[in-house]
Amino acid sequence: MIMKNALTFLCLTLIMFTNGCAFGQLTQYPWTATIKIVGEDGNPVPGADVSVAYNILPPPADASQPTYGEVKGLTDDNGMFTASHTDSSWTFGITVTKVGYYPTHIGHELYQPGQFDGKTVTANRNPSFTLVLKKIGKPVAMYARRLNTHVPALDKPVGFDLMAGDWVAPNGKGVNSDIFFTGHFDKRAGGESDFTLTVSFPNVGDGIQEFAVPDSAGVSGLRSTHEAPADGYQPQWVQTDNRKPGEPVETNRDPKRNYYFRVRTVLDSNGNVKSALYGKIYGDFMEFSYYLNPTPNARNVEFDPKEDLLGGLPFDAQVKAP
Image 1: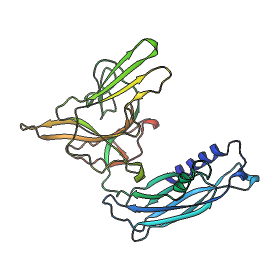
Image 2: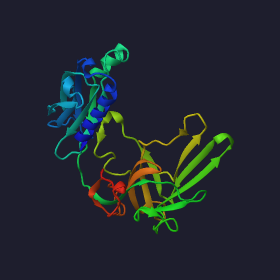
Image 3: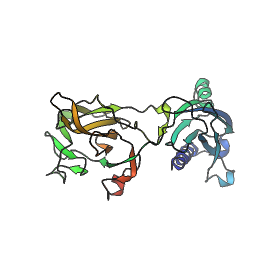
Image 4: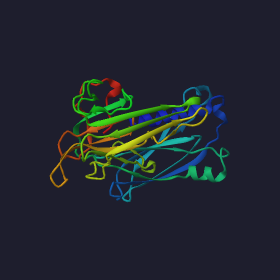
């Protein structure tokens, strides 16, 4: 699937570039990609399968159907692999796989000489990558759902039940409020408006914390760590959206942002966590996928896509990524 997505990306890029241009106008140039594959501990991963997919321009008579080429091989004892080719590609995609690991992918824009200054062209045609392969650990059944929604009521906390996959009544069929969403909309004269979304929780000890995924490490099949952190959770998160006519939207929303969370927390008499449920969120509010481990105190957030406890979801609500 990752290779298919990489090839689709290459195809779309080529079609966009060649719109209104003849294929024969693209000159072939060499490129070299130096790739190092490491594990989460930073140590080299030898024997990993590496595939670098690039465009191949067909003869002019078949210009409506671009095809693709591939340089592939195994990493050496130092986790290294080098791919070189001469072609007219503007992009290539690297896919790395190994039994027992989640696949990793990264795309790269090559550029053509003359598109930008010479330094940019040189740098982009001889890139180096250090990509991380994450081991497949112990995927578990979880409550997982993809949401693309809005808060059903403003200026008051609206609860969402993660195990029901729905808003709490009367806004849905949920029973237990695991997360509160409070929206406030302020519309001003001249078309200006502010929207604030506050994410909060019902229990002391519940909370949320964000985590980032470095683009340079590649896109892993497992975006998160294997376990959620034991601490570091904040009681709320505030998202803002400010709009003025004719100006870019000012917002702290980031589709690439991710979170870990802790809910249904019970503290002992000393304020320590006695029991809690842990999970993660891919994406930002209110378009995101969430995962909840139902086992108390288990911080494993490595999801088994075949074991979604919210079975029977519509296709666009199903979560396939671990």
